[in-house]
Image (cartoon, rainbow, N blue to C red; front, side):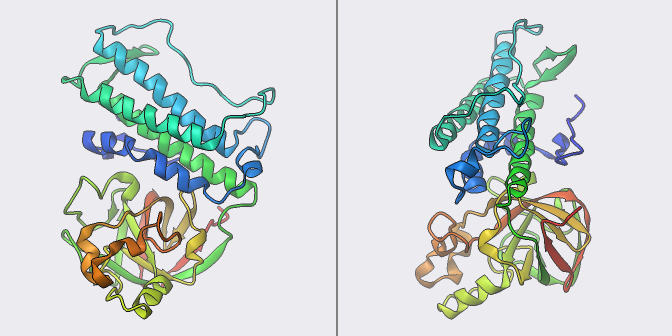
Length: 326
């Protein structure tokens, strides 16, 4: 079936494998949580306009979308290709009552919705089975990818809402200090330039696709200043050893969060998640403790994953802009 694409958030379903799509449903909650962390309750519930949702409403809406998609997958499992009476996603209106549900409750529901959808999809052996959506057949693979489109698109919305409310990462310029690629594994090898295409830096390969290399993990970034501070603590870390593709200097690393947009050289990226450290990089840390760069334990020190909004060339020395005006 024709892969779903989106000009606004740059989603392209053809770049997602079935396993990419299923596994990503299991990590949506930590990505959403870090997209809104450190925001007070008033900001979480503030709308930048009467018909634009607040950050917490967008989080809720992602769960709503996952539940509706789950209903369609259930109809496929039941062999009902032309279901009637299906629900429709809500939209923001100026007459909506104040949103009262606590953030933790909403996040917990999204986690349950994501896991339930993944379980429903896994239970269907033949993913070519389909159901009609507005007269067009949509199979299981399409629906699971569409669920990820909902997640990526509304994470982008949350980032724009946070910026519109004046709580995004402040505009700032830095510089690319190092670029790295590898044929798999770490450390990655230094290069002077590379093209970032929709899948990430050309020539870069992830050895473990189960945890790396999904479309929202297309590019890994880290801070020269963070690496320097870790070296002062006695860790044997250096650019490329933790597997980052781009090392940058001059940015306030701790304020970058999922939803933040970056211009890096000619490419445009969107921060998608904090990278969870794995055992492959433990050799560079005192006592093998890679959790020193785990965002949950040490906020502001981890590497960042980014999705590609617009491909482009990147060279050592290029400018990095946070939340560029265009």
